[in-house]
Amino acid sequence: MSRKIEIFDTTLRDGEQVPGCQLSTDEKVVIARELELLGVDVIEAGFPISSPGDFLSVVELSKAVNVGVCALTRSKKEDIDVAGEALHHAKRGRIHTGIGSSDIHIKHKFNTTREKVLEQAVWAVGYAKSKGVEVEFFAEDAGRADLAFLAQMVEAVIAAGADVVNIPDTTGYCLPHLYGKRIQYLFDHVKNIHKATISVHCHNDLGLATANTIAGLMAGAGQAEVTINGIGERAGNTSLEEVAMIIKTHKDLGLHTNLKSEKLYAISTLVSDMMRMPVQPNKAIVGANAFAHSSGIHQDGFLKNSENYEIINPADVGVPTSSILLTARSGRAALKHRLELLGYQPNKTELDQLYENFLIVADEKKSVNDEDLVAIVANTPLLVQSK
Image (cartoon, rainbow, N blue to C red; front, side, top):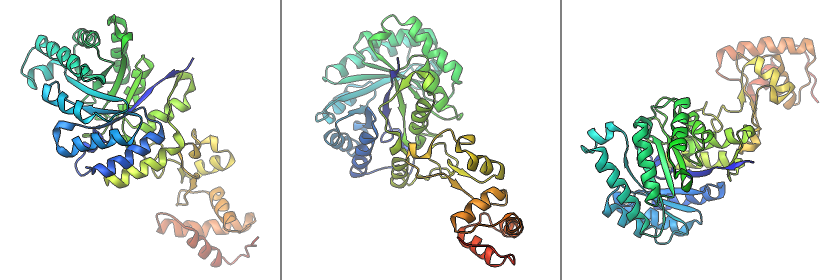
């Protein structure tokens, strides 16, 4: 039986922390409505106490969407009070509160002890619960925390009423198999763990955010915390579109989401434009080159059967079609394909001559477009029949 994974999108909170990517409240509402249509379960709308703008964004998003709206807090009374007020209009409100769990954070960030951190965590969950909303607890830097202490913390906050417990790899430190084992350890050693949803929130400092997230889900976590285009602090967060398509492509994982994958490309473009953060061309799923083929060997195989080189149908993520890019690395099959699209039907001899002339142009240019091809045909002495 397939297990449902909740998708917690933090594009508008963690993603917006990237320098230069700040959004107005109106822009956040536009993106939030698209996230709801995409099928996310919870939208983290902001950190209300941090600024009047963030407070207003949480208020307005709570009014604008019907899915869960989450507000981030520290484990402080004033933070939780402000978050509770900001979530007043939410149909499904959630306070996301927490504190450091690693000895590095306990000593060097909070200058305190494990015992005091544990006490603060339990208090924060209980106080947030009194606001009448869902409570998610984050054990910051859980990727580097002592496992026995982490298990003790998770058990304590669940007992205090946490609905969701977030096990973040805050610094992107973990390796996938070790992060998966970390989640498995909690399932094996926290006696009340099935009273809450375990969530995974991974950063991409070593390029492993998506791999770690999938490892955590395979180990039993029920919520993935993600951002559109993997945007986020430093090297970014786990990419929503990558998690969505891994789960959809690998049905043997026994997982599913409510995401409508055909909307991925459009919302990727929207977020990129609004946050003024270009998507790298070779970005998985939504990059400009994700469904583009330029190597002759690949083009030939793709033209014979797209499954030779594509494991995802581009339409499944909202990309109209794959593209064949003509470069000096392209072969005769790709050239013939593009010529036929332009209405030409070269025979073998003609194609050989056209290909020689094509390579001369391709060596001079990074890519050859349709206008170039028409000029190549016009300058090739052999007769090329048109349809």
